Length: 387
Image 1 (tube, helix red, strand yellow):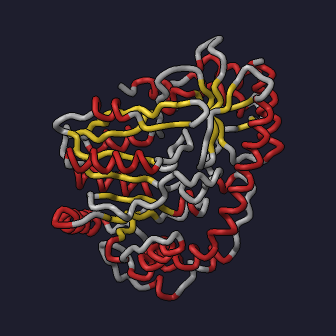
Image 2: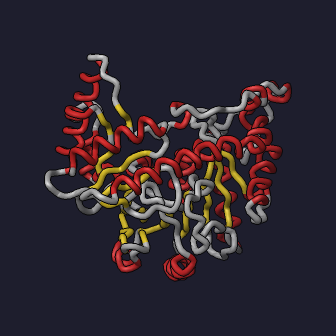
């Protein structure tokens, strides 16, 4: 089902070998796959590091759900979004990836399935494989000029007797699309009808590029079992500061039982380190400085890209949030061939659509994080090659 992703295997893939050859030759690549903000020239306040030097970090007093002070800081963040979250309903994790791992353990047994969007980020497949569960894709389809929408026919067709949960990435990676209010209402009914949990990944939520009022940003007003995931990797642009969380929402005995079982899983690992938890309140206060830099960069690069493709054979698909963009290109050759040619002849690195499980060709996915001079040079060369 997802076999195309393994074309990208770093040990055997032709592209990886070509990139390594370029690096050995001292060639500087224009990398439009860069998703690590710490390599993109943003300015980080030194207070982020000094917050780690608190004396209370020298004392180890673990709690399965995480230190109360850190959970209160997470709850305070949601308060700024006008959402009331009880710190008792927050579980700290070392990363969003770990949060997925815990939820897969909680919700599914070996052979059970979880529904994931397509296109989506390839991480899900590897996490599911490690937990012995299966993923079943449902489609997001593109409606010009409205953007991406959830295909409920595909969702229903993907459902089996062993389906346990649905993953929503909001905004999605790589489509940059938010779930719409009408879609959310329909999705809640679907989950209730089939007794499914909802897993909402909102790591890019703070990077709303269009201010779409119809996009859902609050998943707390629900009676169905819902798990909301977020963390510092994207929110603070600091993937090395390992702190994520799960907010458990819903009503009744099912939610209570889920929290009891999730606490047992968390207590088994106790993976979140104390200094990061102690620093969390200060880091939340510093997030605006970092986020504004990333937002400005993403908007600047997207604006250039939109203007650049106007007189080309390419089309920029609508995106509402996040820090990536999708360029639909003419199907003159397979995506893989085009990506290889861009590296070999133009020293440009981009992601092909199949890396994100697009159902058809031909798409290029580019990061909006690189500096404008790098981004503009690379886009200009890409469009010159494509025509």
